[in-house]
Picture 1 (cartoon, rainbow, N blue to C red):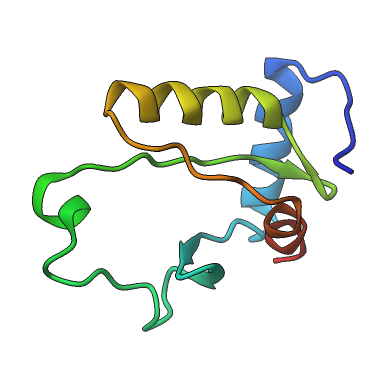
Picture 2: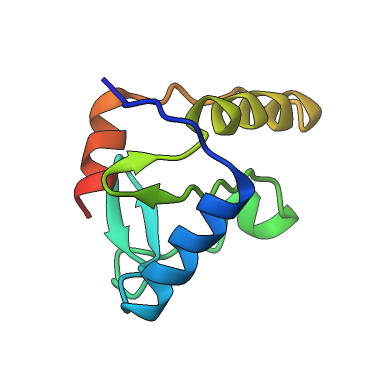
Length: 104
């Protein structure tokens, strides 16, 4: 289960600055059901992908502080709303994906 705690704009900013200063900031992609580093050869898009051709897609970034995804429910709400605007089916986000991402 994801932990909850009170988050303010100041705490999020401070945590992001601390992570960046410590060189802990990393970028991952979710490809074919698993998370891979952005620099991985697996993090590629086929030339005939509709998202690649037309820019259809939804992109989500979340701050993880001390193993906790900040504002996670708001991220999921935005994901569903953005999918509706683009007439796309919102993906099912599995808890084990989030646990795996937090480990990375």
